[in-house]
Amino acid sequence: MATPEQAQTLRGRLMSADCPSRQVLRHVSSRWGLLVILALGEGGQMRFSELRSTIGGISERMLTETLRNLAEDGIVTRQDHHEVPPRVDYTLTPLGHGLAERVLGLGAWIEENIGEIVRAQRAIAAE
Amino acid sequence: MATPEQAQTLRGRLMSADCPSRQVLRHVSSRWGLLVILALGEGGQMRFSELRSTIGGISERMLTETLRNLAEDGIVTRQDHHEVPPRVDYTLTPLGHGLAERVLGLGAWIEENIGEIVRAQRAIAAE
DNA sequence: TGTGGGTACTTACTATTCGTAAGTAGCTCA
DNA sequence: TGAGCTACTTACGAATAGTAAGTACCCACA
Image 1 (cartoon, rainbow over the protein chains, first blue to last red):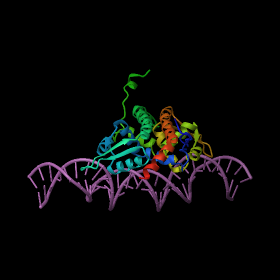
Image 2 (image 1 turned 45 degrees about the vertical axis):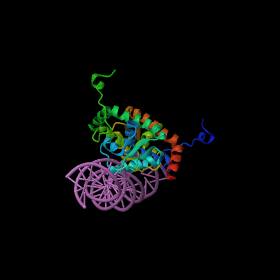
Image 3 (image 1 turned 90 degrees about the vertical axis):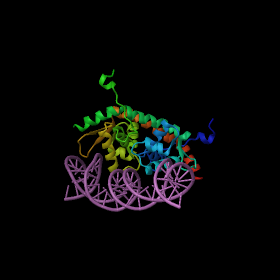
Image 4 (image 1 turned 120 degrees about the vertical axis):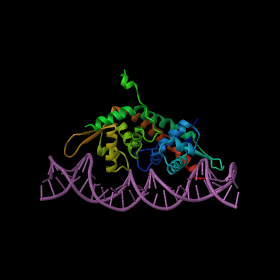
């Protein structure tokens, strides 16, 4: 199924500072990146204002910037309907869906284990 | 297996700004958090200097701070041998191993798909 | 004619975080 | 005597993030 060109997959090395994968990691794991991917992974197509109200605490400035970074990486798609008042939809690309699977796994783990983490935090703080 | 107390697991809600899970997400997905977890997940027990040389680009200041945050969350263990010159080992806690599984999945996905991401970046930049 | 509302952004400014480089401790070995 | 080892800590300038106030555009209503 893969052509010879696609078959010779070059693998990124996250541990090296100048690998392009490092930049992508920065966008994905930025303060709001994971939450945007999480929201789109759960909610499917979403409008700007919908994302803003879903992700507690995010500002318009940061949502704009985070979405632009992810769009430039080919992870989300921005669809502007050119209406007034503006209507813009965001969705995950097929590439973004693969990523979102992993991110959802990570997010779910934290939500499920927060109880144990808080217990650990208290035990450690008590020393 | 679970006691009644453990059975009533409270689930975090990452989307709400004041849920404790949000703070943990910040530590984990901080600029260096994922890379530290990745390194310890692959390397097992590691010394400070070993982590520093493994994770390209990290400074001592940031490594110290990242490790301290993760230790306070019960994700990594710090073992000081009280020797001179200093020798300190870091490992993942059992809790940290669960987390590292998801992080390794995410890291592997990025490394495997960086080729396609770069292709997407170029296609989008060409518009 | 004009005033206000709706949505997705920008802009200007301030606060917080980060990176860099230079210490620090204290024991060992030349 | 003093240089070296390792895991930090400190000081300070630079980059990044947060806050609040615009901006654009058209429509509805008075």
